[in-house]
Amino acid sequence: MAYRPRDYYARKAKEERYPARSVYKLKEADQKYKLLRPGQVVLDLGAAPGSWSKYALERVGKKGLVVGVDLQEVKLSHPRFVFLRKDIFELTPEELLSAAGVSAFDVVLSDMAPKTTGDRSGDHFRSVNLAEQALLIAEKVLKPGGVFLVKVFEGEAFPRFVEEVKRRLGPVKRFRPKSTRPSSREIFLLVKRN
Ligand SMILES: C[S@@+](CC[C@H](N)C(=O)[O-])C[C@H]1O[C@@H](n2cnc3c(N)ncnc32)[C@H](O)[C@@H]1O
Image (cartoon, rainbow, N blue to C red; front, top):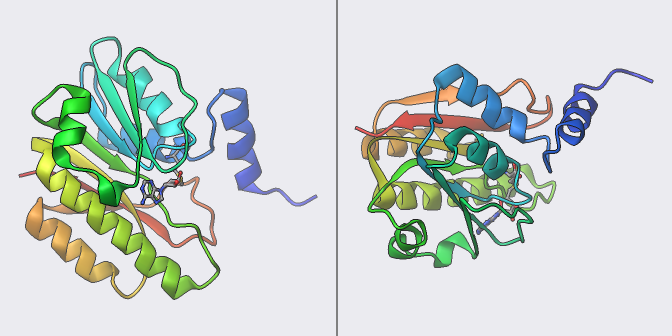
């Protein structure tokens, strides 16, 4: 049987008890850009099934906090984890800040993705729509100097979205993790808020 890297990451996630292989994307970004630190308050948009939140909880430690949001349930029980089962288009910044008991978040993560349909252009626009909503939320809840990491599927609206992130938050880095499947058009944007 041919060697398939995706099997490697899926197996590794199982062995290390993360619910999804996507954890290695965040881990790689964290190791490369030093995103997460003890004591931070983190917002994880599109948190299900819970790998990113689980990893973030390990990194922020006993004095940190993670708020996860998703349409789907996250089965993660942890004293420093707050979960809101909601559509991000129906969330208010006040709701998020009050769930965390803070006036701003240190880090906003978004690994949100639409249900893919095979229509690459439609999937791209739905992904940009989610990323734009994540940007709107980050703009309202992220503290100055805070970090925003957002996934988006590349396509024709991508350059405009990058410009929008730059204009509203600050200089942008592009990041494509090693564990991203070769066929995927996903890319992550990373920005430290001005
Ligand atoms: C790739 S998964 C996230 C995986 C997660 N980072 C992990 O490591 O476990 C994308 C998630 O985005 C969520 N999502 C998509 N649209 C959403 C919306 N409008 N509001 C909230 N969550 C949404 C999906 O339900 C899905 O669970």
